[in-house]
Length: 166
Image 1 (cartoon, helix red, strand yellow):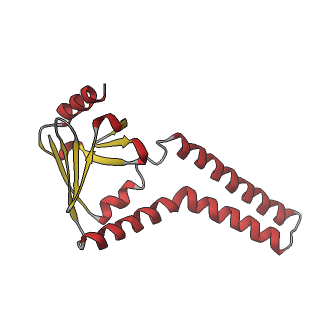
Image 2 (image 1 turned 90 degrees about the vertical axis):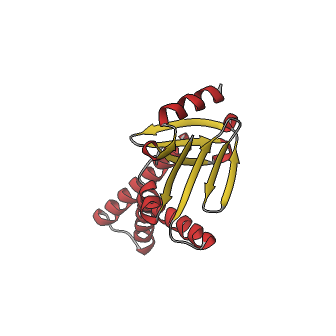
Image 3 (image 1 turned 45 degrees about the horizontal axis):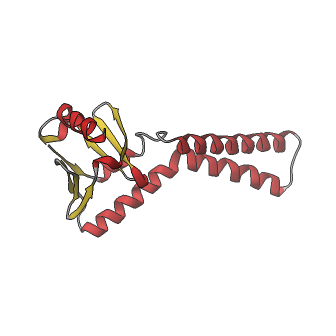
C-alpha cells in the first residue's frame, strides 16, 4: 500500500491545530501553563485593586504572555521553523511525502530522504476525520491522509497495521 501527499507550508501550519493534546505530557503541560496564566491574571487583578510596584506588574504580564504563547502560539512558531528547515534542506518550497506499507517495514520518503520504520515500534494509531496520526517509539510521529492512497486503501492499511502490531 502506498500513500502520497504534497507537503506545503499551509498543510504543515494546519498540523499545529490537530492533535495538540494527544500525549499525557501535553495535557499536563497545558494544565501547568493554564495555572501560570491564571496566576498572572490574579496578580494583574491584585495589582489593579491593591496596587503594586513595577516588579509585580512585570511578573503579571510575563506570566500572562508566557502562558498565552505556550498555550496558543508556540505550536505555530515551532511548525513554521520546522517547515523552513525542511524547505532549506530540500531546496524546494513543496515536496512529496510517500509512505509505503511493505510486508516487513514502513518506508517513509520525504523528497529525497528515506526512513525505514518497523511495525513493532508503533505505539498508537489515532484517526480523526480524514487524517491518521501514527505515533512511534522515540517520539516519532507521521500523518497520512485516508484519501491519499494511490495503491490500496485505508481499510486495507488499517488491517495490515493491526496484524503487524500483534
